[in-house]
Amino acid sequence: MDRISQRHHGFVKTVKQVVVNMSRNIANKRMYDWKAVPWRKLERIVFKLQKRIYRAAQNGNKRKVRMLQGLLTRSWSAKMIAVRQVTREKDGRNRWSNSHQTL
Image (cartoon, rainbow, N blue to C red; front, top):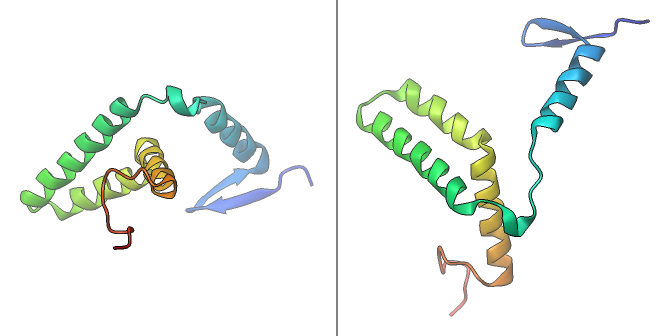
């Protein structure tokens, strides 16, 4: 059985095509040392995306808001900032909020 296929959103892909696509995605990912991550650049990217969401919401363009929210959710920059925020909370170095601290 040489050509095992997989259905994905109406398209049929062979297992070989899926594996090749996965390896391309993995190869395109950059590996960073945690201290060498360009945090300011990532923050700027996320802020610009959030600003685009705000503007679309102000203009009443719901479809664009949804599309941009999905883009932000899948964004590598937003994920990295979220991970940094959670790790800082665990270290007790959270600079964003005091909501998890007890009185």
